[in-house]
Amino acid sequence: MQFEIRETSRSLWSWVLLNETAETVLESRRSFPSRAQATALAFSQLVGRAGRTLTGGARQVGFL
Image 1 (cartoon, rainbow, N blue to C red):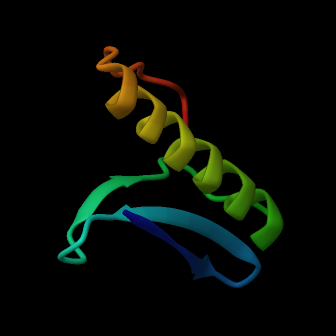
Image 2: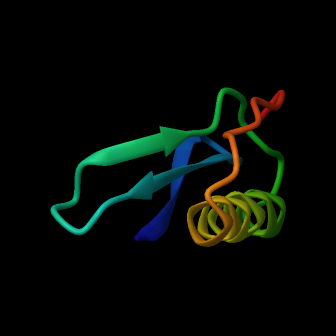
């Protein structure tokens, strides 16, 4: 699993989580004013997903 930060328009950023075959697994529903914000939220989604996978927990739906 990996994430990419993409520029959606001039100075707006979003993130996408990709699986091993580069298929989109999850993507942000909003844009962020900085690349750093998009990166931080993408990383938190990746960590959360990994934690749920390890514990077998249910997937929580957020506003991101």
